[in-house]
Amino acid sequence: MFPIRYSKRACEDRKKIDEFLSTAKVGHLGLSDGEYPYVLPLNFCWHNGSIYFHGADAGRKIEVIHKNPNVCFTVCEEYGTIADPVPARTDTGYMSVMLFGRIERVEDSREMTEALQAMLDKHVPGYYGQPLSEQHVSRYRSSMGSAVAVFRIIPETLTAKDNPLPEEKRFYPGRTVYMDN
Image 1: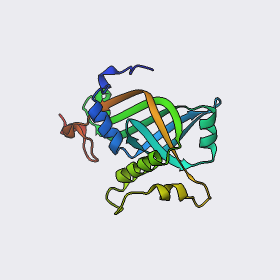
Image 2: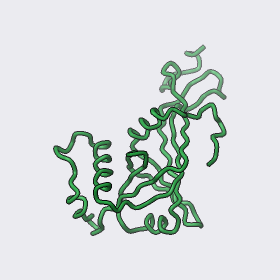
Image 3: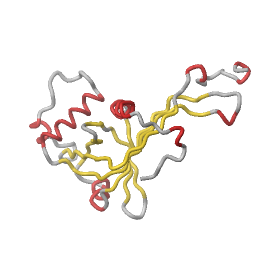
Image 4: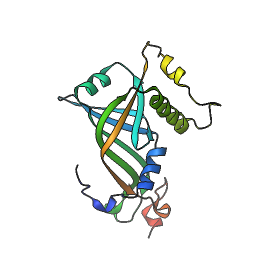
């Protein structure tokens, strides 16, 4: 869609991107209702080449999705500050992924259950002694009475940027430029 301007930071390593998306905890869903952007932080999982997340089946997010299913989803992890005696070379170690696509509500109970199980496996690995059942997913109601809604974002474009943090350049409180000369 839009090329990465600072191409030196572009990451094309699919294995690294998949691993990053499989472990990062929070992503930001960007929606547009035509007047203002609406961005929400979400827990998510990267499963079968798509982003999955869940939430209530009512509210502003649902209304905006119905108006415009085109979305942007970003994930970024900051690894620390890179110290350098040259101020212009002080930088941040990070990895980020940005994808654009269309959002769809998942209606198939098996796919919903698989996606929710993938989220549990990511966020609380090994906590539950048995897998999530389709019956549990279909019967669940929140404290406000709404059913769980699961959404899938199928990427149309995906770009990633990577700026590794060299350990020997990691800034820490107390480090000064005099230590690096």
